[in-house]
Image 1: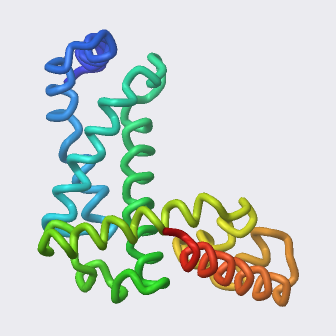
Image 2 (image 1 turned 30 degrees about the vertical axis):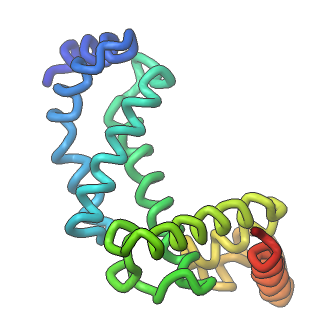
Amino acid sequence: MDPHQEEEAIARAKAGHGDAFTPVVQAYRGYVYTLILRSGIRGEDADDLFQEVFLRAFRAIARYQAGRSFKNWLCTITLNCIRTRRLKIRLRGLFGFGHGDAEKIPDVRDTDSGDAHDEASRQERLHRAMGALPESQRRILLLCYYERASYEAISRELGLPLGTVKTHLFRAKEALRRKLETSP
């Protein structure tokens, strides 16, 4: 797809013509799928994430600024989807909602209806609890468990002494546990 065709398809998609987005998906599907595979996500998870990326891009197309690189914009959406998926997996494993690796965590679709409801409920509780934490506690949890930064790296990133990082991380985990214990 040449740049003129791309601009035209995006403009039509912005105007509400859903079918105009199809050539954009076809033009960038290899690029997006490669990013997903390079992140280590495979199989059905990769396929699901691929669909999620283009669904989010389509829903957010009105916010795309013409004249900017669409490929970079789409890359940002893809990386954000990957980060979100990894964060959910890590936090579920950390706080007892799974068993660690993505391959070991049962997918909601693979369970019977009672278990699927329980898993969806746990995910919602975790999301609410994380959202209720102060920004500083969310940030340190994300740095440690999502970005897998070392204590030393967190110390440099936040400009805090190493002992303070450990204390803040302990307090953030305790605050999250308390919120999870008291949430309905």
